[in-house]
Length: 275
Image 1 (cartoon, helix red, strand yellow):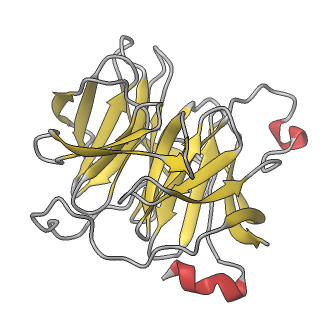
Image 2 (cartoon, helix red, strand yellow):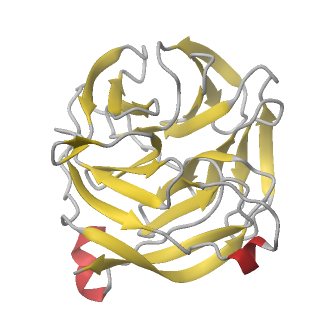
């Protein structure tokens, strides 16, 4: 478990890339609406140390990021530019892509079994693609805005920009429940891109350099990650970039992957506990 590595600095890889990265499941999930038992991370706050940097397509408005089988799967946004992509994380090369109709603004992405599931922002419609061919299998509706998307092995977990996380049935997309995210008694709003890691939900807080760590059982915040300064002005090259967004977890390699909208780099980092 990655949380047992605190003595060595809590080795996690964080990659800047676009689109959400969640890990797929090799076997069908159990028929339950309860999350599987995992080892939760220690409570507390974290800064970071950069381990590696990788190229990233700086035209990608990263909305969702997923890592699986050595590749990144990414959802990009903006009307007229939204897509789903398969990316080589080492080079940033886009290996495969599917463009959304210009009426849709792409948002969160997750990998469920052999399907990529993508949200859109205000259209209240999501799409299901074949992971290998990117063929569109179906669409589905929801009643809120669509922001971030991940899963815990049995349920999809969705954010809509508020302090609420929604749990969805991955077959029917029916809402199974919801939880309000709070730090103490204070609601934590603008929850954006999501990634489920070792029993916790990691969430970008829109328009900040922070990632919040959430216990999905009760919505309690158990820690904050401050990534201030991750992308320097020199690395941006004088070209405008947007906010930090995009979290992916390489479970086999013990690497956490993060990115930003229009960022030219993908970062691998080590989380450092803040005393």
